Image (cartoon, rainbow, N blue to C red; front, top):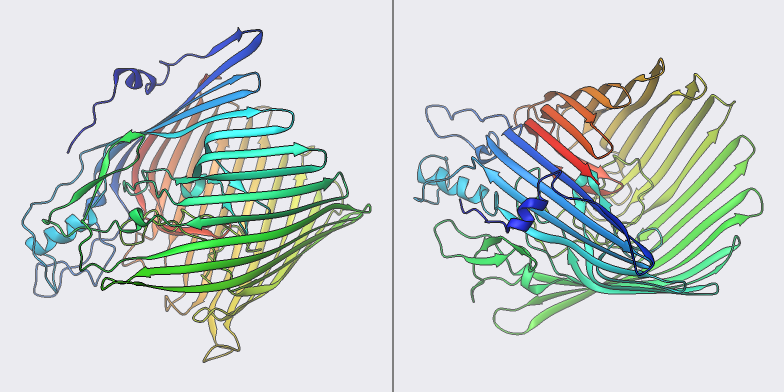
Length: 607
């Protein structure tokens, strides 16, 4: 496997402890340079897939027994390094962020391939394994983030990489989501002007993603999709904030044309980033290949935020409109184009009634497409296409809840919190939603009860909740009233202080699907973690499980972890054991994760 020779200066910076902090004065202004580092070394024993059985009377492994079987994910090493340098001088702020990935003991495949209709043995298996290895374990280093910012009394200007979100995310939401490995920015320009009660923001750039997926070793180039956005806002302090905004998203045709290659056929190299080293391989686009469909989307909204409606109320309203054009080139010449439109309404209201707080939320999304995805296609980049998205309307669901791709969904959610005294606060919630998108036409009822308690002068506390969720085929379905999916769940988070320096912490989530039309049998998913903490270190025992398909994925995954704050500058974390595979969601953004069995050591340094 080809290795990248790093420049000496970057090699020095990439070793924790070799960098230095600078705090001085320049031209009468304080100059502060902060350096941070995160080095993560992991050994992947396997990805939690159960090895398939042999076909009767044959030595060929059967992909029908386990289509997820992937021996190319076994017994390899990765070192992912992230180095960040920030400098602040007066009103100026600059940042540069390096990402690098190095892989060891990666699998290789003999170069004799064959296309077969059944069985995976010899040249047939070689081809299958070569397909699984496409654009994985590519050593690379790039300038992942680069920005220069000026913050004045009436102007805030950034050149380079920046995050951007308007309102509640219906129009645009490009933020960092660590739990899913999402860190998408715009690389371009961002300008905000303030004057009196008015503010105006304008932004434009190309989308930039983290190029190495640490869970699979897959590598992808930056989408470089074009995005333009603007927002005008007027604020009457403590009374009302009114805003109008819009954003346009244009998929990059050069990225959309990238496609998987047939093992053994000629390929072309495509740089991962124009500010780095490393490339992927792709099949050249030929005259007989079918061009991809490109999407151009415009989102527009108006927002009204009333944070103080008297002493007891506050409210937020957002109304959005969407126009999306699908453009497909015709190999014989010409093109086809279709346009769809959608609307969205989001209402939030809080009432503060003494010891009680009442929250009412309503969503009404009518053919409103979300989340908007990048030009990284699902066939070429299975580890990237789900989570690299550009808008994320609130789903009013639990943070862990999987979301169906229903672009027409509506209904209310109501939550009541009541503080009995300074130590006990029960809460309850009920949501009633209708999904009317063809193929996802369900009526959803989701409710839960819980309590937040504390003791020992608030030093110890616990939050426990339990819920029940029904998804029933609705009136638009061919079989209205039939169950699609039903589950109950329990979530807990408790901290018990032990003396002055120790604490015992327990957190977990258990979900039981007693009806699941897609899976066809009851199954459970969840995790539980028990930690003993001291001021400088933590020891954790964990257990993750998923019985959705025990014939394909390992159902039980015990693990252990340790973290130690060595000093103000260094923290080390270690993990050994397994993590379960499956779909993980954070506020409506979801991706399928492989399992993990192995160990990792992470060193974080801050100066």
